Image 1 (cartoon, rainbow, N blue to C red):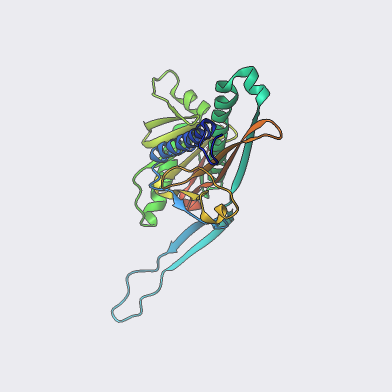
Image 2: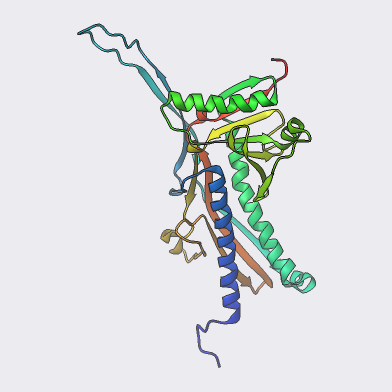
Length: 295
């Protein structure tokens, strides 16, 4: 008779599956951070307020006569609150009938892949929705001018704030790009289901999206210095006190994953826990340009 707490084959298989899932998720996001130019994720506590800012400064006359009082320039920072950094919980189950019919490779591994992709896209979709609330708005008559001026507008804004910009990232509708370039040969790369172009029209990266993420006739530009990735650590010791232990990856724990068998329903369950938010600190550092041929 086997001793209690013996590590069995099924325990090893589950552990490898959990580690593989969180490692792939982390590597995908590390690659995306590199493409977007995000320096490092910022750890937050659940409930942290998501706040963006609009900063203004009105300079007074600097030609002050000798001995006169120097007037103060008027500065203001307005906060726009969008909610809290929240914990999101997801689950998936596969029945023994599905494994028996399709095999583990399809019933388990393929559905794990789809689960992972949807979790990634969930974060990205929220980010694209947020980007469209940028307040640095304008309109130009052509797609080329919209691209050029979107970048120019954010560079101008950050220069006025005396903030450094090393690179600008663009977000456009894929149909607009291909209509503009026609038969021109460009290199489109793909990651996490996103198509992007490097070093195009002065941008470090341009992401080619579809509606409703980015509708046709819209160009969004953001300096990489204005993009942050906030996260809540799923391995937080406070969660563990509930008896909830999730497998995580490395020092930056973006997602927690746990797999177990539910004998009462004869299904294999997986649970994912994450609190990730892509964010921009300055709303007026997001250029949202409309292509309008009436101009």
